[in-house]
Image (cartoon, rainbow, N blue to C red; front, side):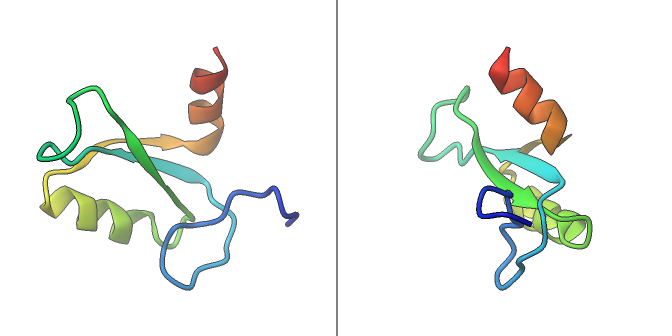
Length: 72
């Protein structure tokens, strides 16, 4: 892992990110705005549930797919 390797957003985790969790807090963000958290395999479900319970989770995408979308 290099300094440029994206890491998981879970507290204390230093694992390489595999997933992008796109989310939006409708109370403070416009509907099209997407904030992102990164997740490793181990923390994907936990972080998704945290955002989902609050109604914030909009999409879960593999990091490579997200990067390809953003680069297009």
